[in-house]
Amino acid sequence: MKKEERLKIESQVFKKLVKHLQNRTDVQNIDLMNLSGFCRNCLSRWYAEAAEEHGIEMQKDIAKEIIYGMPHSVWKEKYQTDANADQENKFQSNKQKNH
Image (cartoon, rainbow, N blue to C red; front, side, top):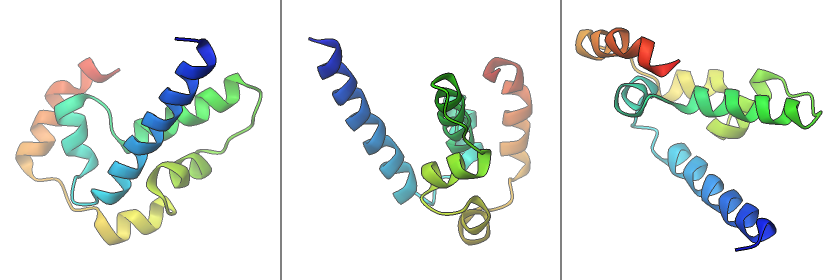
């Protein structure tokens, strides 16, 4: 596979992942973190970091809007729920693994 073909495929897969996460508003970031060690916020941070690596200034809020499909504040208001004790305990116990 040529590098250009691989980049196109990876781009398409990334877009599908982002779209999937945008559609699955029922899935909380804390659940993603507890199961996989990353969440929408991580993706937005990686997005901004990659932009910076390519000399493109990217504000965190803009990167979050790209990943969430709306301003982060709107997503939080519409879809974010409070973490329960079990979710918070799992998050705290996994914190070291996720950095």
